[in-house]
Image (cartoon, rainbow, N blue to C red; front, side, top):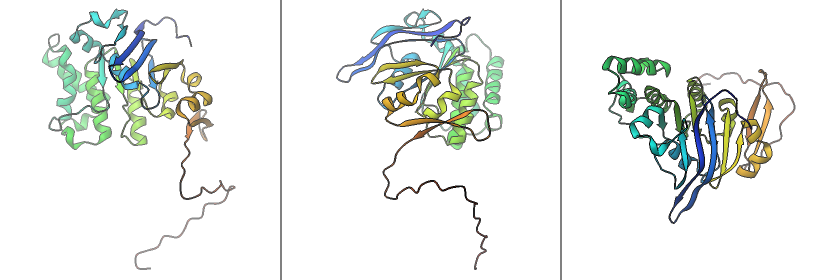
Length: 287
């Protein structure tokens, strides 16, 4: 699929591969590019190479061959501090010191800018990031005392404090309940910056991403708009499950659902015809 014209290329991968002695090829000569402001989701089954690719894009691992370019410049020619000012990374298993307050943790995002900006600018950036993530009321709480969803929002707020051009996320919705997943992805989508994220939940991708890269065994299977890539046949071929798009009951859009068979001990009854819902009377204690 062709990208929009008029936007610069924020990130480009040219025949990028990652090999580990004894483990084989984890990412196999992959090429793609992301324009400014686009949201790319990297999808694929377990072992497809998603996290390996995400870590290379974040600059944490160097490719075995090929090249990554940031704004047209090779990663190898960009220093660590300069790269940290351009790329913020949120991993799926980032450990946080539970003794830090939320404000202290978010303020860590200012570190790449500490020489160029003063204390007041850092304080303002922290406050803005807390407000953006809806964490103003939790600024004084310890990281170890807040919920998983709140910790994930704090991680996004810390990344926002880096003032990055690209936000890189590795499974940001892991361990979150459905409502918290939607809130987190809505927050990320509203940032207006380039985002590259690995996501496990296929049903969230189409409403969140502008593009999706589908991986299998380290190779790029398809790349383009989610509706073009996550077709019924392609999802079945890569994930061995069926995905269907159903009309939303009240809104002019569709809902993506996965049909995941479970071989249970209890037979599933067929869907009954429309029947009135029977509401049992409430019983009081002792009756």
